[in-house]
Image 1 (cartoon, rainbow over the protein chains, first blue to last red):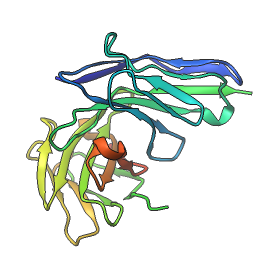
Image 2 (image 1 turned 90 degrees about the horizontal axis):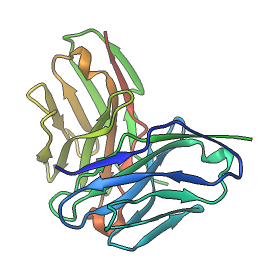
Image 3 (image 1 turned 30 degrees about the vertical axis):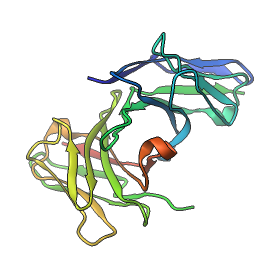
Image 4 (image 1 turned 120 degrees about the vertical axis):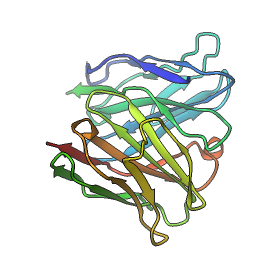
Length: 113
Length: 116
């Protein structure tokens, strides 16, 4: 079945460091790919998405490129802030049926000043 | 900004007891979901609900689970006889349009269930 694999956390960085959180997926066909973020005490929020190969999703300085050849959707940010501390979830959905999301385990990011 | 609200935020219950988790989806949304996350594990799909019926459910969603939209605004998840392994964070989500169009499922903050 469809699955998403994320790097283990927590990821601990200093402010202004470069961030990469790896995500790879297994799915038949051409899924849409997402990054959701959960800030402390809040629900999951959509951060960015890409719906076809080579698309780049971006939001709030975060970027991820849909790489079909490597089945990856790694999240990057050039300079993290303390306010980016959160749990990040990679997810996919098939573009058919009722389109449930399949999530990875989540990666906790801790950014220190 | 419209949001999905869930109650309770945390519930502690004894094994074998019934639990009802409540969700108020965004008012004009049509598709409703329950997910759960056992501590340290993946966020797992439980069930989707559309047009007043279950549209899809996972193997986790066995006869102990049920969902209901009793009054057009609430969306509830009932666990009939809780087990220790039901301890998890339960997330409700909703959306108004096909996911590929907006990419956005709107999630609540979650209800933490602890079964003793």
